[in-house]
Image (cartoon, rainbow, N blue to C red; front, side):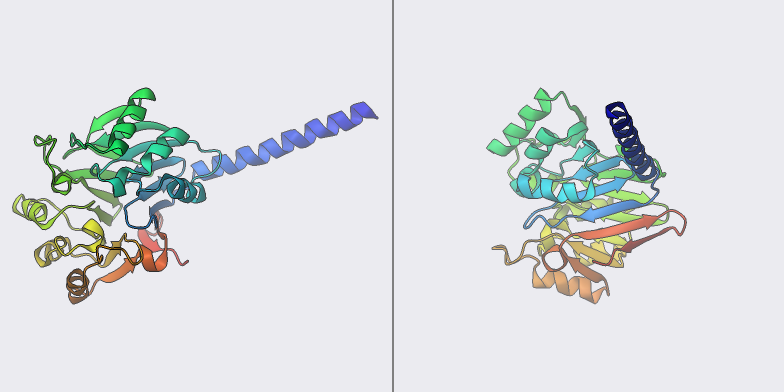
Length: 288
């Protein structure tokens, strides 16, 4: 009788394991690519996920909150984030990444050569070195590929940052473009208008249907000329409720409205999840 119980216990365990493995295999074959603008308060964090592959762009300033958000969208069995991109070393963009690197296995970190005197930046660099994470310089023509054919291309900075100790870190904020079939997401970090003008004068293709509005909707970015070139139909603003900076600025909102762009805000809607389907070649905002 006892042997029989042991047999059925083992059989039940094998059955449960088979179910878990089946779920993992189905998930890894999932062709849906998701672009998730995480609501991390006054900061930026974007998770791009397709099957078992994840790219995290920035991490807000609160590690506990970021891990909570990632746990919602990354399956519990997946303990790896393939790539992290630091757009620039400001607290509201890298603060949460310290705990991510302490929790997940990370293959590579893409960052510019910009430095910061903050303890957060120093701690982050220490953990990257300790965990022997590959470091890749983020600059034009560096790209990441997804298994469904999507590509994440860095468009700016054009070359290595020379003024690595400059006070205006926004000037060298990484700008990346995600191309999913005919759909394009322009992810701008905190890039200001002066650098937008560099992109325009350099004849860089910044066209995209979906625009992550730079610097949480600051009035010193997202110019009319830039919007004319990008021609987005939807704009995403990552911003905290009742923040002390007055973001998003009314002038920026007016410019977006004048261009007839649909505006979505994390302070109003929470996480914004776009799902891109290969069969229909469409990216749509998932209803919450």
